[in-house]
Image (cartoon, rainbow, N blue to C red; front, side, top):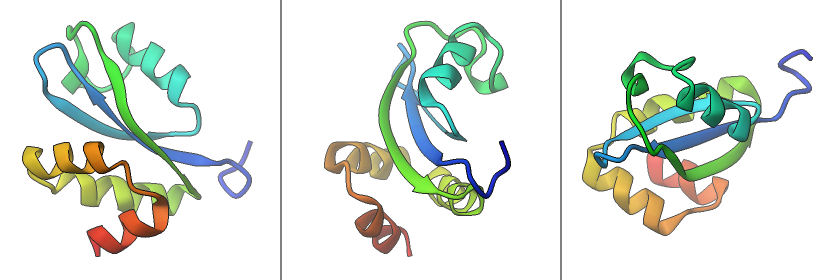
Length: 97
């Protein structure tokens, strides 16, 4: 499937040690399984009890990459606030601009 028809998501995973990881995918459940099986990001290798604490459908890959970058620039405190607020896409884009 090409990027122009795929629906992309931005997601945040929490580890058992309470660290947060932000990523993008077209299938959040599949990506979580990959992370749990140490087939994903190096940051999560060896971590147990991973859980998706935030996910949002963003549409195209370009938007997902831009949003992922902006979220990764946030402090942990601001990421926690984002998770608690669980904003819709228009509000999230406004918050991060």
